[in-house]
Length: 548
Image (cartoon, rainbow, N blue to C red; front, side):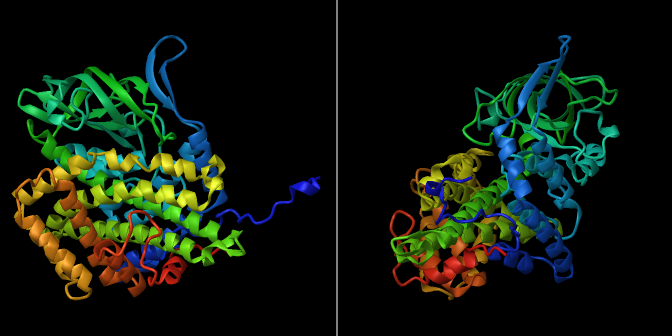
């Protein structure tokens, strides 16, 4: 029996039991915009089912359990045999199994697959972000493996399967498989050409023996890995299976799991290769060119993952403010709180809109559209740089909207905040992305033409956008000190691209507020400083979640 002093009032109900996809108008509208009408009905049904699952109490419980019970490394069995296995809580397997069955690794094998998979990834990872890593690596390995058709013929059906088949067995005995990646080494980090892993050819055609240490190896419980090593012909890409065809365990010594700031449910590791069997993927000496397709796909997933974190944080903040009363009224009706929430919602919608546009470009490029392929070359690192960097301040401000409640672990916001810096450093930190943009500008003029062509579709729709594009032209024309101001340039590119997309596709109140603040300079240095004339109520209403 509750004490009379412990009556709970003025607390919002849990944000649970809703369709994460259907409640996100920016996301659902992007799917309708970019998907062939013939595919829409089926896609809506699939994504709404996934959205209801992501918003369920069960999925939220799985997410909490997977993070409260992080993976454990088992290097040896009870008899002293080396096994190098990672043990996960059952909740992890349920999350990952649901994701695989929903097609979150099968974008490459169906029409509109990238848009559908991107929307699903953004939806489902709002329940728990850590298991997005093996989903992303598995999805992204497909284009790299296609550089070696005989390997792709074996592995691609497994990687794109909708069957989650856990446990280490030969590929031929499995109904589905997961992939990881090992590129970085302790002496080089992002400078992968400094790798020292040695690859010695064996008698079998295309087979090599690897010796070396990978400082970061993603998803070490996976069935196979793409790694880089120094072969006689130069830095090359290799496939390392965990289990060989005869059932013997490959040499894959997991030295330790990383103790990370966030991403606690997911295993990241250091591994040793010592006579490890591997197959060459692509041409010897062209390892970076081979694996770069995997890197590009994972960079888009970093953008999607950050957009998902932002969306969930904003949904939680608006939900709290809708029910919480303070100073004589409901928080969401207070002009200053509404300004904060609208500002956060603009950032979230801009991220989602940009990420889904790039997913659509992947679909078009897969059908032979070279202009869309050129756009991806420049827009992916631009988006990855900017969206992932906006994630942490968005999540932190959303947490503050809940006050002290947001700082308490049970709210779920601390887990989002710990996760928020991850995507900005994974697959190349901010400087790596900025330098990659410069490289594309200098070496691939078609990429800039495609980028400017995308901006041109919004010409004349907003004077602040037009002025920002003109300023960008001036920045691009001035090559003096270009490396030192690369971040400034990439930020400007991201903002004008987001502005152009919102002007074309978002409601007028969203596009106007974004252009006024992000491009027109009518903005402060923190969230909640939109112009006082901005239609904040309409923006917040659009971004909110309606229960029941």
